[in-house]
Length: 211
Image 1: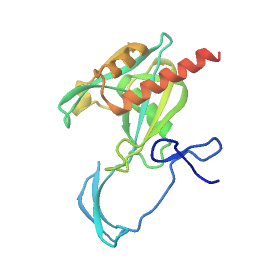
Image 2 (image 1 turned 180 degrees about the vertical axis):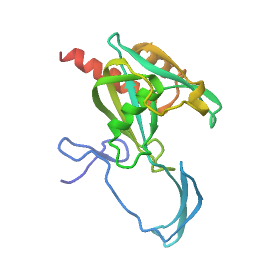
Image 3 (image 1 turned 120 degrees about the horizontal axis):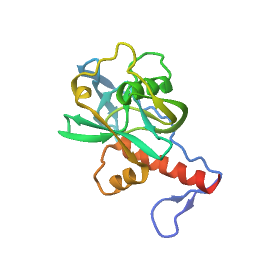
Image 4 (image 1 turned 135 degrees about the horizontal axis):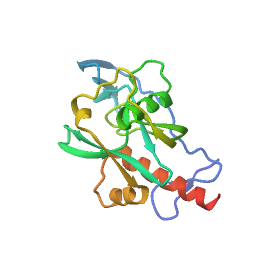
């Protein structure tokens, strides 16, 4: 299918029936070093070739990935966490989330565990909501976010003891529309929370249009 140029601006027009998705691609790595490694993240520096024969470096933060949960109660309120994040020195409004640090564990099970740990809530109904690459120019981190509904109280999982930032974390239930307004007003700035809340609002609108 011959590409069609935009009538006034640079680039091509997408047409129905054409693929519209991310595509795997591998550029040959000329050399690689690992200046930093930890149990949480590692830093890899790769040397890549340019079309003109020169080389350039790209730093990659290797990350195990994470899950997130939008927990929505029967009244349309979402569970938000108030949690300190040292990198930005702010107490952020976030959704329950955590690392995919248990090898072989399905992401929905990780999400269920995080919801119980951070929110002391369990859900009877789960729906995969989003898959996101939060900063693909810098890290291979990948998020899988779920919508959790039909909620009930749950104890902390056995053996879980809140520590560090989690020990000072608190839970607040906010009407979904107010949380969305907080995103647009710049009062809620966490990327995972913002994208996920907007996605849930869209899903609820679609449900109301097509009951």
